[in-house]
Image 1 (cartoon, rainbow, N blue to C red):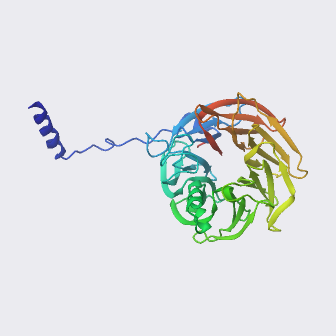
Image 2: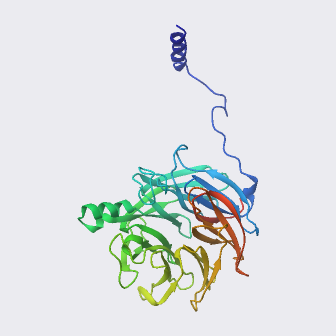
Image 3: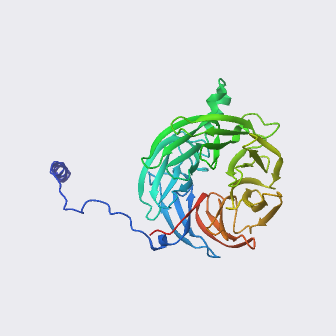
Length: 398
């Protein structure tokens, strides 16, 4: 009887209109934390669904805070790489819908996500979500153009390669796409299939050419992106003289950086353990510029004057400083307790300080490692989220 009476009250309650006075019944806007008023690095934490924020200049970096991200609090959705608007007001990150080590299914291991990912725009000071746009499966890298009005998202869709190798047919079925998004309206302008497991990206100085690495096919793709709604592939060329079979690369081009002064494209080859350089004027790889890194290179960064290229590499977890004129390389060994599985490097304004992002073991928190450029030295580190990968510098909020 009591259960029936209670059920009747609940049903009756559902038929009544509920009104709120202004300001009630709504979530309040998130507050701006005090640390947002200082320069900082934002870092994506793939396996803890967070963005970590760390100081940008202190010898011993501080973890300022972690902001939860994603759409489903009870699932790991894998924020993977990020970029920021030129004024630093907005952060754009890939919600990849794959998480290494999390098992099978829609949120399975790297490159094997079965559901589309998305690009998310948030307020860099509060972490409030502004907008989200659906892209393709397994988004990899994301970069913005210099104006900040366009975002380019690659897709490291390893599942397409596996399906092609199992079923055969047209090799184009293995290709992953490049999405171009209008960052103001957060609308998808185009999605162009270009090559298997597209990942690293970089733009030419005039912003008309996009360079893309293709890990599984040992290729570099050169795209004309002048028309954002109808980009075209201008060139697709092998990284080296004897590429491996699809899915078993001999070089494994994974990331790239465009040199600011001459526009050459420096490509990180994970399998070969080297950096190779594409000459955009000759439109071919430069055989004289092959720099062995000693480990598997990932994401690097040039100094503004183009004289030095800093590149991370895993396996030996070292940061290399390469003289772009002579190709001489100096390695910075990082203490094992400070860094495991180095992924990316970024420089703070003034380029006297920088941060290395270290993935860790993908179970325990990774680290952000601070270093100075002159002298070239590690100064400190701090634990952040689980499996961090990308980083971007954010200026102080007003």
